[in-house]
Image (cartoon, rainbow, N blue to C red; front, top):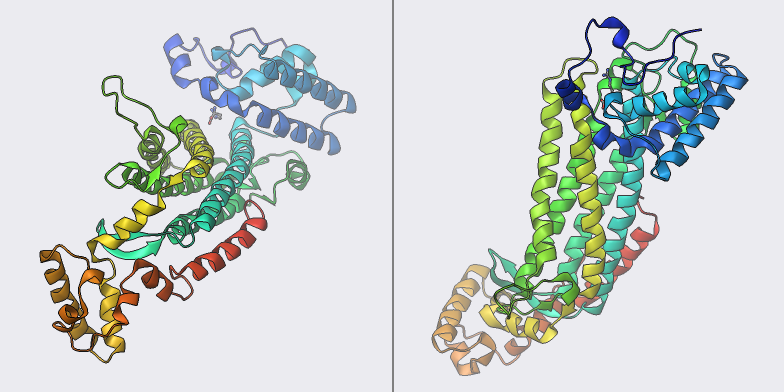
Length: 469
Ligand code: ARG
């Protein structure tokens, strides 16, 4: 009979002449943040144990004891009764120690044919797969919110901007659908990333594989992995999947950040295009008139964190020789942070978007300012036979004149227009309204209300295919 491990003693302490210093214990421990992998660690251990039984490395009695022990640990953790210990370093050792305390010998056999290196890689992939599925669902929820608003405002005109200067009229629905497209790409990127996440590293053991006759396909099946890693060295050291996820998350955050920036501008009374629900804003402790768009501002700010998480992970990996190095323990906090931040931001946006109140009159008034239909005027002259460059020149002079007279293009009398081009006729006024302008841009991808409605239909169909389809 082997000796019971002494409490507080390291699993590997047999090799060392003096105990690890307290400071180093604290420095190297990860249990503070990796305990959130506990349920995945237990799931993976159960699958591993059942496989070990199937290949006759464990007895039926061993397996029973392990199952009983792990299910009790599971309950202890759920109920907050589990005693996490810093001395036990990480989630894996904490659980294994407790298992040995609960079931004895059988618990000590669980670690046959595996290492913490393939164990942690497996746990992390299980955890991330779940996070991706949740985030996929939330992305879809935000997209639905965008579609609902776009449907209401398929024909609401507003100024479209380039260089943040009024450019041409667009419909608000069309503008919102631009964000739908960004999130659609985010979903497809996540689905692609998930395929590479969902590959089983367990069986690689420390780095070289194991001398036991393991059945990796069986473990993969039980844990819902679509593939088994092909190379043991790569399996324990690869963190591409985490980096890919952080890249997806950073990009999704950047999309939400750009939308945030617009909400901040639009809710400013100088624009007055939208009002954000009060429950998403805060006041000022000194300026009684203030209603601050805190939520979009924070989303914009948090985007920096997630971009930072990506850079952190890239940097953790860049100098590592094969195979596992302790550097890899630094993968968790950025990964968790990126997933948490994106998840929370999406959840908040799903609600925020539904609550946006649109001031269609203010949008329309703004679309009439800034000579937004000048291009329509030039296109009109082209249809009357002018070369585009000449038309551009004629309209530019008309704009200068109108500006000096404090008028919009549509306010200029016909005789005044004719001074810039003799081709102008009464029908010009139709193209000078924002409504006429947007209606004329009627092709796939254009801003015309009919096109917006058709795009919404296609978008709804794509959402019906599933959260990550
Ligand atoms: N806590 C470690 C991590 O997160 C688990 C793997 C430890 N492996 C080792 N050889 N020290 O990476």
